[in-house]
Image (cartoon, rainbow, N blue to C red; front, side, top):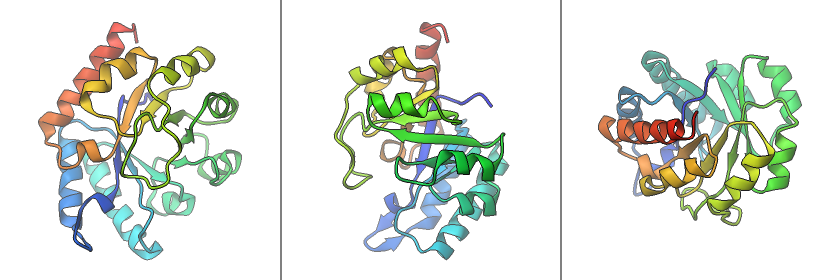
Length: 217
């Protein structure tokens, strides 16, 4: 499938009121984003119990199916299989890509997190569909993240690989043009699009598409 330029990291931990998880707002926010044209969603959750993750993932799958969006599950291959997700996103220390491909099949979308040029080049030799590269800027949505890499590192990676590159980590709207100009295929965003309206989603997507068009893509 052709990968869209805007990739939403759907993290329910962004929707806490004190210690209480506000799943209603989380699901409504996702519906709003999809109504604005969002087509690519990753469910990432580092703190739920497995049973709760399954229930949340099932609801997200229903929402994405209804809205015509693709669902990627972060790390958890068994969860992706259980809810019939469209693929998984793996970290450097997660399940091996080769085994994930065997389990999920040829048509599944598999992404891999990378944090430097060597990892990106190694990723390009594997059976994946895209890489996430970052963190571009500092982010509060992931604890103990790797050192920030900045936009300029995307230029070096684009010269070496042809895979789609999603810039991730602290992405805000004013940086979109420079990120695409550097060679990224799109951006993966979590907190910057929390509670985003459909108009906001549309604006981000149009900005990314126009920037890619200027690059001849």
